[in-house]
Structure formats: structure tokens, C-alpha cells
Image (tube, rainbow, N blue to C red; front, side, top):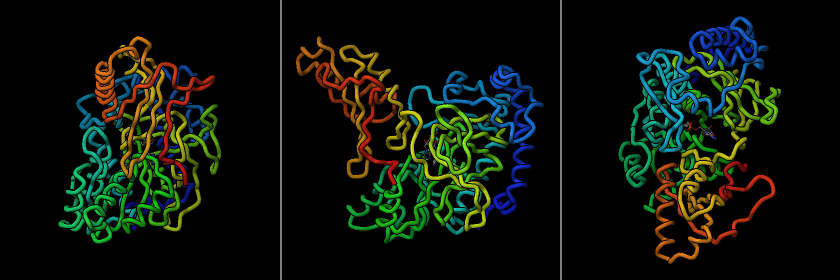
Length: 435
Ligand code: DLL
């Protein structure tokens, strides 16, 4: 089934005409309404009339994550505050998140995109969707929720956590669709086994998993353990949340809802556009977003695009599974973590040096974060009790900033390897990008 047959199966020439018309409107709109974009366009000598078609796209400036921070909270809005009906944020810090605003039209658009996405995944009004993405500032919970309601499915807004209860609910309520991060799906499966049962014994048949990278090997493992068809869903809060792209049952790349989100691949080093098929950084322009439209947003995610029509009939471009990041962001238990956030904590705490290493592993199925930190010479001479207090303080501060628990291990001065080039801050033993 296809939710919006007309748009999802449009001949590419028609689609490109539609995109070009929307791009022209978008540029005119941000030029008149968002000072940040007006300045950025003027700096390149561009006026709103200079962007006539898709060929002019690469003349437009990029938008990057720090532009959201620099214009925190609502500096990038293109509508008056009274038109904003919802605020979300990127997963990550409990400090200042990157916030994004939605008008009523945006919430409607988002629900529509998620309805398309769920339909592509084979979900219908007869399904019971157990939504174990987190509800809150994070876009996962409410994004999936509104989309599932839009198609008329039954939604169980259980959110993440309380894993044994998740299994009980799936059994009692007859859930047919599980939506959560892939690592949590694996954890639910293993918990079911510990309880002497299996997700195979429930009615669950499809899983819609995303918000973090996962390998093809992990997909096979989840499918083997649970009997679910495991599909990949992608999105990011700066663009709208989940619902930018999704796999259909053919599992042959993620269909990008291109009539609303215009994708490009660029060389991460030079910013030059790359052709279909080439691997590079995904850049997305929101063609129709109302409250906070974004021009050429650099996602930092590495993938490639394939314009060939899919066996399902959709003509929208398909993106490959995300195969890496251009920066050092890691996603731990669904939360985006930048090593610089850890560093900022270390710089504030007396007794430690900003020499550190972050070790991420998957203990059984839950991500485990450990931070190794060098203590200063003076602190090293302290008593064990004082060192323990220092460790506890760091644990607390890291939790304050990242919103997740990490184990902290204090190590001797000068024991973390110094590098001559880029320091290797993160050791990720999970192989999330490996196929
Ligand atoms: O993670 C939105 C989302 C919610 C997507 C639920 C899918 C399901 P953010 O918190 O802003 O938004 O994080 C966005 O997460 O730039 C990617 O690096 C990563 N990411 C999201 N989906 C995938 C995926 C949500 N399917 C950042 N595969 C993005 C790999 C993903 N990475």
C-alpha cells in the first residue's frame, strides 16, 4: 500500500518541477522572514529571484548545527511565536538542546510524512502499534504517535523503559508493530528470553527502528531473535524528526519523501555536490516546512542516493543505510553525544585534566559508556576517599550534561596516549556502522 500514490510514484521529471517551484517559494519566504537567511543570501550576493530551479541549489549557503545554537531558541523561526504550537529538541544534552518549532501546519505535515512512512512499512488501521520511542522533547515518541493515529492504527504510547512491562503489554494487548531504537528492540528480545518466552510468541510482526545507526548484521540478529521484519526509519529534529525516509518491505534503501525534503550528497571536506551513487554527507532542504524551514542542512550523516524506482512502485530517491558520521558524534542509548560535551565537563572540574577517552560498548544489548579521565598530579596524591568523591562528582556532572549514566574511571597522569594529530577520543566497540 502507498499512502499518497500521486506524490510517491510521480515521474521524476514532474517531481523535479514540483521541487523547483517549492524551492523558489521557500527561498523567497526565508529571505523576507528570517534575518539569518537574508544575511546568508546577501553575503553570497543572492536575492530571492536568483534561485530559479534545482540547478541553482548549490549556490545556496549551508545551514549547520551551530546555526541553531547561535540562534537559540527561536531565532530561525519564520512565523510569529503565536503560530508556534510545538517545540521539540535534538536528543542529547539536558543542558541547552537544539530546539525546533512547529506550526499547526508542520504538525500536520509531519503526521502525514509519518503516515506515509508507516504505510510503506506495511502498517494499516488494523495494526496495534507499541510505541517505545521516548516521548518528550525527543521527536521519536510523538512523531510515531501522530503518524500511527493518522492512519487509524491503535497506538500504545508506552515510551521507552520498563522492559518486562513492555513484553507483558505486547502479549496482553496483541501489539503487531514495535517502534523503538534497534538497540532497545534487541534488549526487549533478550529480556523476553530471560522471562522464558520470546517475541516470536507475540503477534508482533514489524519493527520500525531508527534514531541511531545499526548494521545489517544487527538487523539479521533482531529478525532472527524476534521474527519481526525490521525496517530502518531515519530523520532528525532539525528537519522534522522521524519521517524523512524509511525502508519499505523490500529493505532496499530508505525512501526519502522528496516532495517535502530535498536531499543532496556533498563532499564533506569541500561541500561540493556529488552525483547519485557517490557516498558523502547528506544535506537536506525542507521544501514546505512552515515555522522553521531549513536550507541545505548538513546532517553529518554519510550515505548515498539512488534514483531508480523501487520494486514497491515508489519513484522517490532511496538513501542507503547511514554508514558513518562526518564528525565525532556518537549515539548512546538513543542519545546523541559529542565528545566535546564531556570535555566541557572535565574543564570545569578541579583535579582532572582534559585528557580523556570515551569507551562505548554493548554489554549484552545495552550500550555502556565509560569515560577514562586523567587526574592531575596533585589530585593523584590524594587519599582514595577523595578520589572516589571526584569520580562521583564527574559521574554526576556528566549525567547533568548528557542525560545518561556513564562509568568514570580515573587514570594516572600522562597514562592516556597523546596523539600527534587528531586525538582519538572515542573507542566504539559496538561496530554500529559495520554491515
Ligand atoms: O533521532 C529522530 C528519529 C526518531 C529518527 C525516531 C528515527 C526514529 P535526533 O535526536 O535529532 O533525531 O538525532 C538525529 O540521529 O542525524 C543521525 O545521526 C541519527 N539517526 C537517526 N535515524 C537514524 C538511522 C532523531 N535510521 C541523528 N540510522 C541523525 C542511523 C540515525 N542514524
